[in-house]
Length: 239
Ligand code: SF4
Image (cartoon, rainbow, N blue to C red):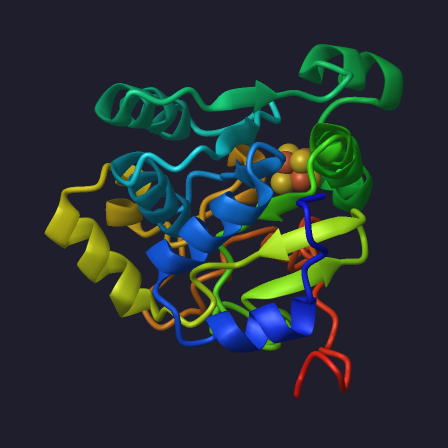
C-alpha cells in the first residue's frame, strides 16, 4: 500500500467531480506500481487505455483471455498495443478450452455459465490481482442497477484491494464522444449490433430498443460474470 493509508470515503467524495484523467493521475501517484487496469476491451476500456497512454501514467495493463473471445476482440487487442505502444498482458485460466472440455465436458458455458465464468474469469482475476494494492475498472453507474451505487474509489470486498472507477459518472454518449473526438480504436462489433461484448459463446447482438447488456448470457438469467460485485456504500462511504 502507498505510504499514507488512503481514507477511502474521503477520497471518493473528493474525486466524485474529478475528470477521469485526474482520477487516474491521483491513483497512479498514490498507488503505482501496485496499480493495474483490467480491460475487457469494451468501449469504456478503450477510453481508459487512451487516457493512460496519452498521459504516460505508470499503470499496469492486463486482460482476461478466456480463450473464446471474438476474433474482432483479439484484433482490437493488437490494434490498441500498436496504436499506443503499450503491452496488455494476457491472463489466462489454468485450463485451456480443450482441457476444460476433457475434464468437465464440452461447452460448459451452455450448462453451467457461473462455473465457467468462475474458472475462466474470476479465479484468474483473483490470481492476477495478487500483489496489487488497487485495480482500475471501466464500469459506469448507468450500465446496470447493480453498478448504480459504485463510487470513484471503493474497497473491493471480493478481491481484497482498492477499486478505482474513473468513468462511473460517464454516460454512454460521453464514452462515444471521447472515442470519436480522439480517434480511439474500438471493437468493430459495436457497429454490428453488439453494444456489450464478452466471450463469443455468451454474447449475441441486441435488437433496437433492447437493453445494451441484453445480448450477454441471453436466456441464461445471468447478468454479471462475477468480477464486479457492487455493494451499497456504507453510511460512512456515502457521506
Ligand atoms: S462469458 Fe461464457 S464462455 Fe466466457 S467465461 Fe463466462 S460462461 Fe465461460
